[in-house]
Image (cartoon, rainbow, N blue to C red; front, side, top):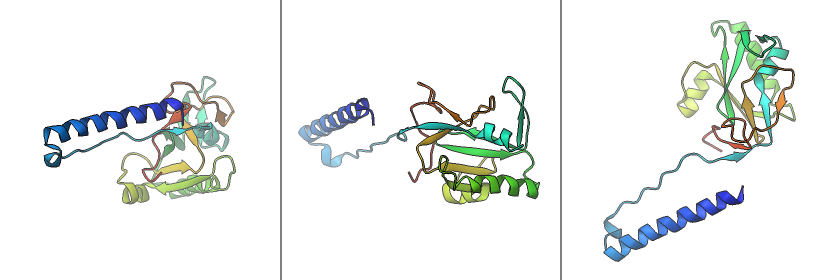
Amino acid sequence: YAPQTHDQLRMHDEQLGALMECLRRKGTLDDTNIVVLGDHGQTDIQDVCMMNVLFKQKGLLKADQNGTVTSFDAFCHSTGLAALIEVRDPGDKALLRRVRDLLESLRDDPKIRLDLVLDAKQAEERYGLAGPFDFAIESALPISFGEAAGGDAIWASCLPGDKKMGAATHGGSPMR
């Protein structure tokens, strides 16, 4: 919602208008297909949830004093507004249930409010999303997900210029 965003949209609108007017004057507008493509948008971020720190606190991940992951049962890969959760052994049904139960419990956490918790099959069916992950998550709140495992703080401040933890980011559900 930055003023620069509105300025940029206004500039694109003016440029498209000028192009269309040029085609109209040349008499080729009716014979021209105009396709406007755009990258995904940006969402302003209030906080960054450090899921790997949460996993560490829940005994699902271990990290050394430098924050380097030494072992994990669950690991968060951030996409910005969403995250992909990898389970160490997807064949371990009890581990999958434990991780899913934790993720589902975060739906009721007023600071996290996950509203999207999909297993890999559901993510592929709904969005065509496939890869080496076991769950896809997203919050109803304007928060992004960080990957760092150091420290004890689940919440981090937005970092200017960081593509996943910045003041605005992308990478969420295509339905938003």
